Amino acid sequence: MEITDWIVAIGMVLVILVLLYMYGTWTFSYFSNLDITGPKPVPFFGNALEIWRKLAAESKPFTLGLFEVSRDWQRQYGKIFGVFVAYTIDVIAGTAFGMETDFLKNENDAFLQAAMNMLRKASTFGFLEGFLMIFPFLLPVFSFFGGTSVSAGKDLAQIIENHLEDRRKNGANVKVDFLQLMLDAEASKAEVAARPQDKHMTKVEIIAQGITILLAGYDTTAATLQYMVYLLALNPDKQEKLYKEIIAAIGDAPPTYENVMGIKYLDNTLRETLRCFPPAVLVARQAAETRTIKGVVIPAGRGIAVNIYGVMQDEDIFPEHHKFIPERFDDENISTLLRELAFGAGPRQCIGMRLALYEAKMAAVTIIRRFKFIKVPETIETISFKKSSVLSSPIKPILVGAELR
Image 1 (cartoon, helix red, strand yellow):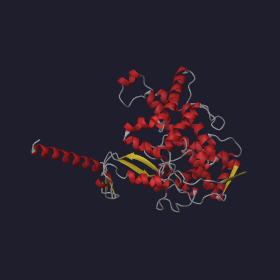
Image 2: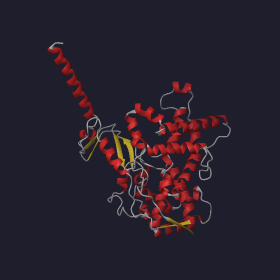
Image 3: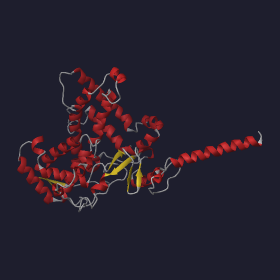
Image 4: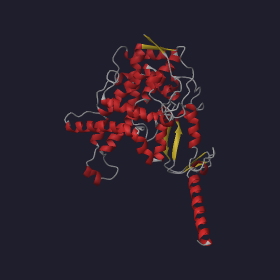
């Protein structure tokens, strides 16, 4: 081999190495290109290793060296939260799928078992699945060991598909629920082949939307109810005011949509609870057009994560933000955006917002009329959250006492 050949070969290797280095650094130059300062990323890995070390230090080890980000909150946070979870699961099963379930009395229901299996894995392995979105070729490996919500979700998808077929066969008995709305928008295979992409829905899309509703609503409402009970226990004057307004509005009458949704202070209490502890601390959006905000250029098409928790705790927006003050939502100057920010904003605002509020209000009326929640020695004064989840997940259990009225 001549010297020139060696020079060419070495030159090609150097070019390849330079290109690889450029790729490994360019991939993580997103923020520096926007003139946003931050920790210097490591080529090819970015700040993932640094984040992993921080999270690993805060969390307990799990199988295969993973960490536990457990949202099996019933076991960790006690029976009250478990009741709230059971309630929300039953509501979603009924409103979304038209299924009659009773989680508290029949945990062995096939739908409930499949749903909880998927939800547990989605919360336990959520951080891992973020990496699998970047390296999807690793998915079969983890699925083989049953380690992702994707594999667990297949069982749930099959149950929903069977339910779809039963619904089609019994077309005369049409139910008004989310599943029926999706069925009404379903397209046949022939229509799918001929349709514009924005028309009708496939069977897979229907199942995916149903699972999305379940994922989004199963513990967010339960968490909101838990935080509400906690805040009322710490603020007995607010709890008594809420109780009196509920009794004045409906007395001992069964709660209905009409009488529950009209209780102003109940609405204020839930809005303030969502302000203090929004279940989802971030919401993702995409820039529709290029904008410059405080000197930072955000190009059209870039992803943006809006810090909901930060907005809700901003002293300039909500004075005395550290205090639980439901009366602040009596102020008509508070915009609809801020009132509903916990559910996102814009065209992609949470589709289940109205259902979630109604569901929470029905539960709140039922329990506040029967129980008085009190502070006990085990009740923590300040809640600290895990940093490994986009949902507000407390590090320590939230414990309060309950007395019959």
